[in-house]
Image 1 (cartoon, helix red, strand yellow):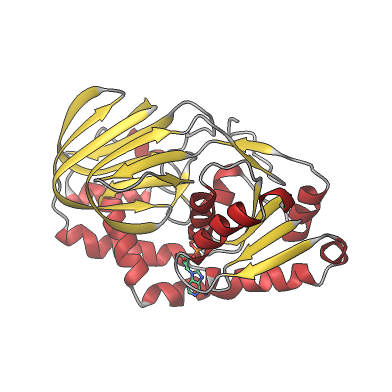
Image 2: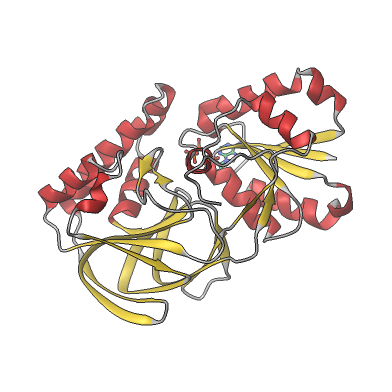
Length: 313
Ligand SMILES: Nc1ncnc2c1ncn2[C@@H]1O[C@H](COP(=O)(O)OP(=O)(O)OP(=O)(O)O)[C@@H](O)[C@H]1O
């Protein structure tokens, strides 16, 4: 049985529309399936947990229709389980779909899922914040400036408007300017593969399983989908005006040529901040003081997924 988990609010209703259209197709009517609409923040995670506990043997795959936040919740509910997952984009940012180069239409994706075509491995990241239980990220984590931008954009009234106009990145740019004037870089202590580093005047640290975040910014252009390492991007010791110039080039990936941008590769990263700092994980934000992040070498099985040639898997 295929189980659809649909976030009707994702993409300002786009996910609901995608599912309604799919549900009318003859292919959908032929398959053994059931569906759940999520009703609140965290519901997709709970549903995935319940499906794993109660319906494990009957599930062929869970098909997520929503945005990156919904996929994040489902993956965390399943906790690296054997149940295959698939994703039909219906969010506003859709960085996961962009990151793996997913371009085909919802009905084509469903056809690929049910015919067992295009099954791929995908490697997640694990993270443990402060003394909380370990969790999983699908796309990326960001600490500092970019996380504050994501928080400001998520809480803004203009985000809904620009998302409706399919101009989601405009809200990010407005939030960037708002945060730029108040943000204070700080010294960060971290460990990259056990090597201790002190980063003076640190603006942000980003760790990613594929190149994209923030609804289409190519933050780590060469990030590959692979099992052992993830790239770590650090921006520090830069003036406010240069940060603005840097972010203007982030859509093309040219920002990595700035001398204030450092790139590392790691399988384990630890970050210590001596005061509360913002982080974002798959677009959702909160604060932390310390974090341990590890690449998950155990792959999850993703169905109906096609990687583009640059994805490197
Ligand atoms: N019925 C609901 N009403 C309101 N919010 C919901 C509902 N169901 C789930 N949510 C929450 O909606 C949030 C946003 O979902 P999601 O990230 O999938 O969509 P998006 O923000 O449009 O897309 P993207 O993350 O790709 O930009 C999630 O945090 C999720 O918990």
